[in-house]
Length: 271
Image (cartoon, rainbow, N blue to C red; front, side, top):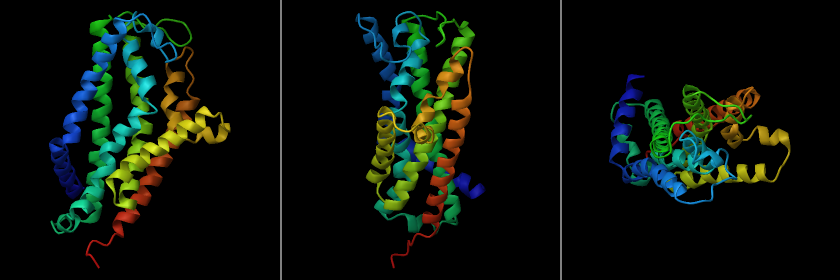
């Protein structure tokens, strides 16, 4: 565990120095402000997006609309953009052999990098969520949010609904991060690691839009992105969240299991 934490600390320092992180985090922090400012100065609202019709009446609608818009498309990319590169970058630069001679084993390297990928996922989602929430409250106001059933939250209830909704979407985002790790290790390519996970998310969304079999739709990782709908409704219902949590756990365990086996058996001696 201590070796894994050492690798984890090194990977975090490497992430802070990457141009990807330095570019994406400010973009996530600024983007919601630009979006809300543009909405305030136009008559049309994104009515097709959940909570979009409330963007001019309550600031709590800003993070909810941002989540509804970005969950299926942007969040998988945010997870994959770092997770899909952590392992394959060692292959691209030929540094894995050197890393494994620094008194750390493969298990420590693997779990340290996995922790770094998941940490980035949390930081990216938190940055986007907090930026959208603060932008909404500052530019629009703190009027209470309506539930999907038509009743009204209290202000504290509105804040709780926002935080819970984003926390729920963290589960499938972890799943896509682990898929990106699996693609990265299997193909030893950062491009495949990133694009592979995003393509899987796109195909899952395409199948959902085509109204396929309910059974298959329920076991898709992307379906859990919408499990928060039932939690913030009144009365609340939790079946999608429970089912989605199980699905996410299966994806995470399966992807990390395959990744660990492939990484443990990798030949780094150049034979």
